[in-house]
Length: 195
Image (cartoon, rainbow, N blue to C red; front, side, top):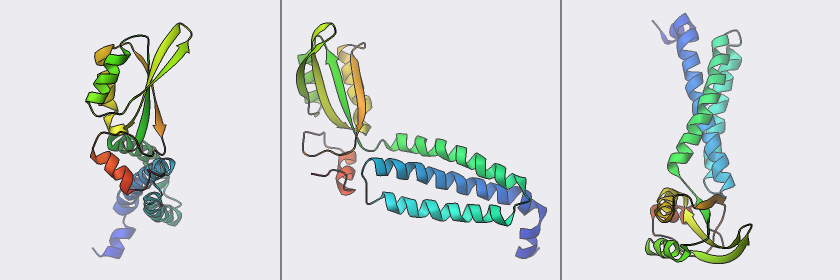
């Protein structure tokens, strides 16, 4: 069977083509999700490169659908690939754990213990006195690589598992005390740490 005959066969039209569209759509939506994350984090050197491949794959997928408008499986494959690509992109982004986060810890007591524990583990920490609805509290503020969040949460829970804390994404950072790790070095390479 020649290549031309294979492309015209029912096997290709109803199995192979929808599968290829599904895989292409997973790829381009995964890249789209990562590009959005890179853009939000200010990674200006990598976001356009990811966007290039995202659009290239999308054009290939949509062109096959336009050539096969009478095949409903291509529509189903396109839509299913979109949904799976969203999931895959978020999963990969979470596993990569790129970027920085700010952690604020609100304490009525044990402030010194937690501050010492964070410092001993290489994290910079700032202490702020504050007044809450139930009186005087201390707020500990630390900026960390997102990859280190689990470790910092574990340190917080060593002091008290019921301590209230908040975590937020940080787009840029300049200077400071950060633990030496690969994520912070990548942050600097991709130009997100702007002064």
